[in-house]
Amino acid sequence: MKTSASMPPIVQQLEQFYSELGMAQVARLSEIYTDNVEFIDPLHHLHGIADLSQYFEHLLVNTDKCEFHFSSRLIADSEFSLTWQMQFAHPKLGNGRLIALDGISHLKFDEKIYYHRDYYDVSAMLHDHIPVIGWLSKKLKNGLAQ
Image (cartoon, rainbow, N blue to C red):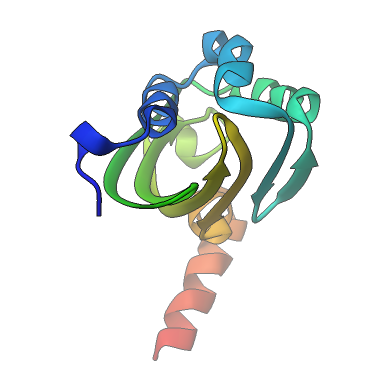
């Protein structure tokens, strides 16, 4: 594993971008992602910087807070993986309380990132924090764990 001193600049740029995530950051997407970026998460599969910009605008328009804290990095040649915790607050989820979500991202890059895939638990992000559905989701998880 590389240290931060030998970390490729694009990794540092990405971490800074997501640690300060907000509407103002959307204009900076082209600084770290290629025009033809492929972005995948459990709910979306996007192609191109225009689709990615629209995705972030839609995601952030009603979000009160969204920031990422990175805990580990695996870097090899022209790809890297990051583990993270996203902390966000949205008025329609969890009564607007701060929600923490753990995940991991796998990214590929040349000078900029051309492939970004996120892995996280969708129910921990959404379902658990919606009235009635959250109750049912937690009951199902607890029932399956026994």
